Length: 444
Ligand code: ADP
Image (cartoon, rainbow, N blue to C red; front, side):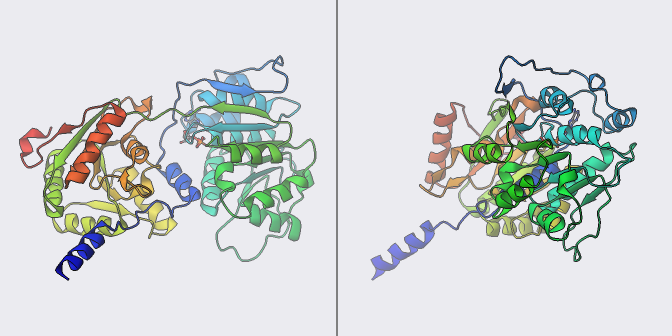
């Protein structure tokens, strides 16, 4: 009997609590990335263009002036701090503003300037004399639609262009829409255009499908988008943007956007160069906490992310740290979109120095000022219960863009997790150095 109960205890210990991350939608992640982004992501890769007639010339621009934009639009761009086109914009913008209009499918990782590109080119096509919608932008969620509308309004600040975007919980459908640009989710747009006839799809000159990869992840968005697209004039300019390049997105893209020029900018790979990696040997949970508190007292550069395995442990850690007088924030999947946005904005502004989170954020992070990442719990692959290399890289890796150095500290509390550190060293071919967090002088 005694053996049996020991076995049982062992078994209970081995049951991993489901880590967070899987329940977070692509739309959530995409939105969080947008909130955290402060700068353009520059890429060293080259833009690739796939076209039916490879001999047809392709222009690229090095300045916004070459695009012959109105003074009002240029002024808006400069006020936003844009000085020259980003890499993807160099190629996409001249194609988008050329006549007759060309359809495009463009793929590049988030933060590379896609939104700014389609807003700029569609604003250039708006005729403000005409009081009806001429540009239709489809976004996967209310939050993303609002975000895009805010950027559009900034860009169009000195023009007379008007905007209408979907609002969460809006009860009544609009009557006749007079604004020049509509930004909405596919479902609402089917309602507005086809059910309530609040605007005429035949008068739309520019149709934009943003975040197509997020879109196809959401039930019904694909078919609703196609429903709308079918009502457009054949010479309406159609564009599709996606942050990823998988086959499913491409299939959808090519179904919905006919005869498109395909423009891709491959993503900049994350790497562990510029990152100094450490591990700290702790006896148990309590020891881990002491180590963390010591690190906290010493490392004060920039901002810190702390990754926990589960919501429960993340919550517990926050309570403890706060009890000891540290100002920390916490973000988990339990929070509403509004609450998360609020916390992310505060963190981005530097109101809090430490953000505790779960895998929820692993793929969303690239806050430039984050210089320290602490793996309070190592990332575990649920399939084989072993170290998850990919998530580890996402948590601490950086693309070359920041050029800044970073610090990653892994807290270890068993032979099993120590083994994982060795596996990480083997896998990435980079040394992880032992750090004595109980001898504070060692940390610099
Ligand atoms: P994406 O749509 O690919 O995620 P965005 O268009 O949102 O990228 O651009 C990412 C960030 O870079 C935004 O903060 C945006 O204001 C900024 N940005 C975009 N284009 C430029 C540019 N040409 N110069 C400077 N900043 C830019």
